[in-house]
Length: 309
Ligand SMILES: Nc1ncnc2c1ncn2[C@@H]1O[C@H](COP(=O)(O)OP(=O)(O)OP(=O)(O)O)[C@@H](O)[C@H]1O
Ligand SMILES: [Mg+2]
Image (cartoon, rainbow, N blue to C red; front, top):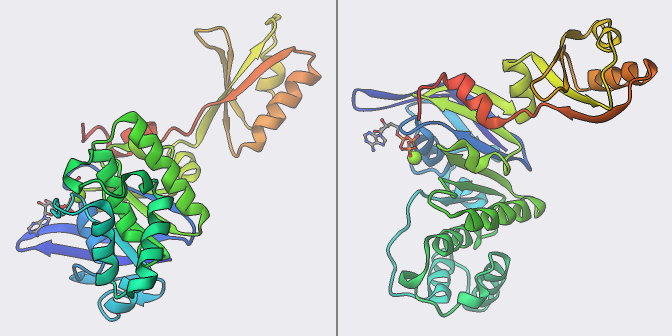
């Protein structure tokens, strides 16, 4: 749905993007992650036709952002980082104003605004002044605004920035709902944990260079070919690790600090099934099997080598 192909960019002398490539397939919730100044906003602004790439090209739904900006804007909704000042409007007025600017006629406008307010849970706040809204509410209003022209693609710059845990969960649920409606969604963040339970794929950018991109699980596999599954047994008879060690995919077996068997293996998740089968055949009483998670935070720290806080 979105293709970023060999994009480089500079502001004056400052080179901010270096040959960036990635692809966001339709229907994904795509996390664009990187520390401050990595070039996330610059890239997202290109997708939204607000900036032309100096080199390379960006395609949205097949349209080149430099050649067909109007077509791109029709299919894409962009939420910038930070909120415009229209403080003296109510929620309804604010959305009607933007609906009008999208050229939606008066009658359809009311319907559209109602539908969008319902989707984003802003109904109860329809008469609230924008200036009297909390950050979480404003963030939802900003997303509501991007939905007015029913775009296929949503590009949200730092949507979870500054939200408290509850507002963040509401944001996560809204994103999930939008995904179910068939939207393709790109979210950026410099805080990985903000996105880890929302996204299906990620691209990790650092100082204008792409470090890794792909489905969350694949990135984990690529960066850490060896994985660990923990087995809890009712008891641990002498030599209980031997049948597991004998499996070709298993690299090592050790007792963890909690007493569990930690079984290291290479390969896909099917190896876990082999491990459990071998344990059962050796008459070990398996109480619990817990694969080590492909924790996004961990991956992020590994690929950026601690160069960000
Ligand atoms: N209009 C501009 N003129 C000059 N330099 C700019 C401009 N916009 C961005 N930059 C620079 O480009 C680099 C990348 O900025 P960008 O805003 O894309 O980073 P970011 O990943 O969004 O960071 P953050 O997490 O702080 O939002 C930074 O060094 C920034 O100072
Ligand atoms: Mg930014």
